Image (cartoon, rainbow, N blue to C red; front, side, top):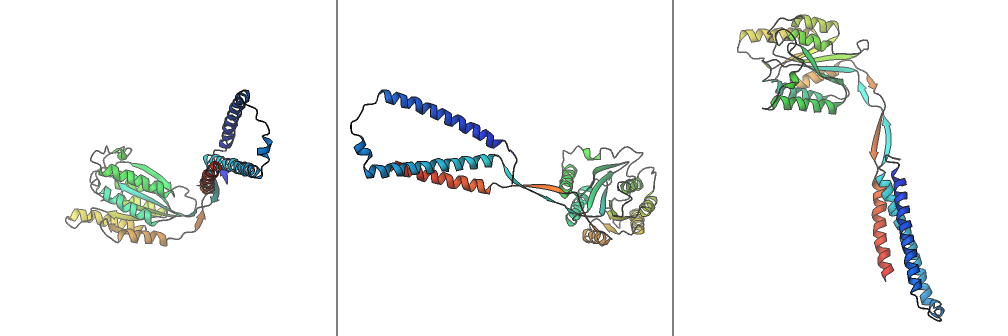
Length: 331
């Protein structure tokens, strides 16, 4: 066990020393004043020699000694408790050598769907354990919303923040910062290519996957087309899974866009899904988890756990015992 505020016992000792010193000084002055006004009584030893008197004095002194000892225990418990006792342990978290980049189109044609996509991303995150996950937003250009990380509480917190920005009627759309730097908008090929480039440690053997959410509705001049971006992902051994919220059968042009996206993602070994397909999340998770992986250990981490139990119990028992001793001293 360790004490976070290790200096607190010394502060308690100083305070107790000051209080004891003040009490001793006050009692000495009071005793001097009483002696000046005292009246001598002859043959008082006849009283003090009585067996009953001696028993009463012994009982009083014993109770007083117990009371002083218990007060010391209570004060010591308070000093330890105020020092915040903790137990410190270390562990190495288990990680998997899978990296997953969530790649989200935030162009105008997608803005009505993005909240549903982020909700789907949240469902995906809750199914993983140990994989590194990152999020990239793109429109005319791509911006990293959060980099690859295995801190799942941070990931869920950031997705909640993004969801709030997407659904709030007072949103300032600050999440789009950095996504409007190119010519045109909804540059899908450039967005996918940028997401491929977000994988680090490229020399290490790892499973790398992208979950691409877009309606594939391009409105501008791209540096890289979607098929070219798919070939680039394939050359980097990146598997792309597609989520298309605009997959409807009402227009031939939209069907062509969906077919192109389906062809690109399947060419990388991935799968294509409409956003409202209930099989999308479990299928993507299952496909990613089937990819070859090995278990890794992350950097050793220290964990502090507060340990107030024994000081609290000692303080409560001591307080109860002080009340009992005080009651006995009055009898």
